Image (cartoon, rainbow, N blue to C red):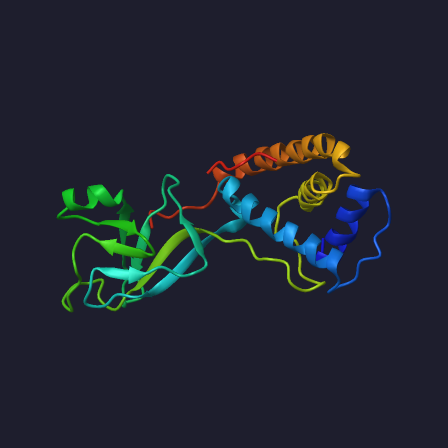
Length: 218
């Protein structure tokens, strides 16, 4: 479903009338803003397989702290996921276990790392003689979902119909003439969300792993 299709379907669902909104006008802009707010909330609802990615964040230098990529919303804590440094020989690697920042000081030795703010902090600084030095840091991550900007942008939600229904509920909630439709639209959106989560759960257990949040309800 494209952004243009989302706007047309959402306004039809909310108002019961075919939309005359066109890109750039007030209704279009409002519909797109509602959609993008909902996309952000959807991304935080659970660990969606569709947003999972191994993200390279740079090479190992003589420090213990490295900036995380702006695309990363959350580092994966799934069993079997590790922060991996691929060595420069192209064959070997070292896997680091992610621990809570408050616990990192208790792991003076061994392969451990923590997320502190927007940085990945290892339990010791690297030196040029380390095997990991110059290697690539790869982070198993859940990404932010892309916003809708252009008419042809694809809706990033697993079930785009949820965005249509949740958007229609929000549109109705803020319109006195449509407010009576809000509870039913919200319930339909909640049902679609439950369906997405059920479809997502089995996949979470089958994500290929090398030894390398629930939000508000709609």
